Length: 212
Ligand SMILES: [Zn+2]
Image 1 (cartoon, rainbow, N blue to C red):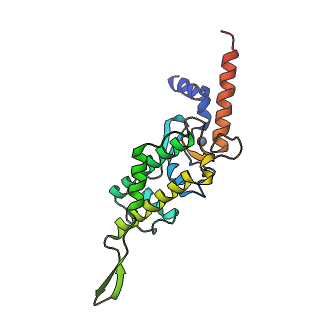
Image 2 (tube, rainbow, N blue to C red; image 1 turned 90 degrees about the horizontal axis):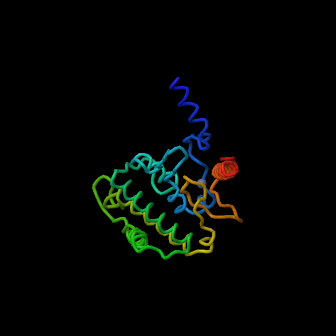
Image 3 (cartoon, rainbow, N blue to C red; image 1 turned 30 degrees about the vertical axis):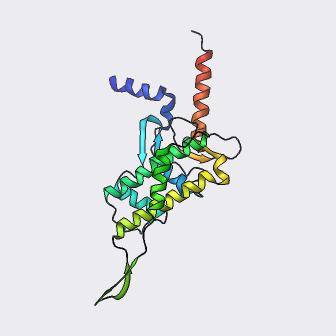
C-alpha cells in the first residue's frame, strides 16, 4: 500500500505531468545567436531535473562540434569544458541584466572581454623533414577552445548591443531558466513552458476559489 500511496502523490502533483527529461527544442533566437544557445545549455526541467549539455568534456566537445566551433574529434579536457561552462555562467548574468535593463555586472563584462581578447594567435610556420613547410598551432586543443570562447563572447557582445537586445527575455515559466528572443508578448521559451505556466495559473485560480 505504501507504494500505491507514493504513486498517487506523484499523480496529484500539478507539475507531475511533465517529468520528462528530454531536451526542449531550441528557444526562439538560439539558432541565430550562438551565445543564446550557450546560455541555454543549462536546462532546468520540472521535477527538479537538470540537464547540462556542457556537463562533461565529452558532451561539451559534442556541443562545440554541433555549433561548428570544434572538429568532431576534438579531445576536450575537463579544464577546457570548465572554461566553457564558466563563460556560460557569465553570459547568463549578462543576458539577465540586459533583459531587465539592469546595469551589467563587472564580472560578466570582464569574463566576456577576457574571452574576446584571448582570440588565438596565428598558426605558426614550421618545417620538419616529413611534412616540410607547414603551419600548426602551438597547442591545438587550447587553441580550439580559446577560439570557441572568443566566438561565443563576440556573439554575446553583438547580441546585447544589437537591435535584437530589446527582445531578449528570460522564460517566465518556472523552473525553466532559458533565454529567448520575444516575438510579440509571448513570455515562454517553448510551447511546453507555456502550457505548464497556464496549467499552474489555472491551478492557482482553482485553489483560490475552493471553499476553505
Ligand atoms: Zn522555458
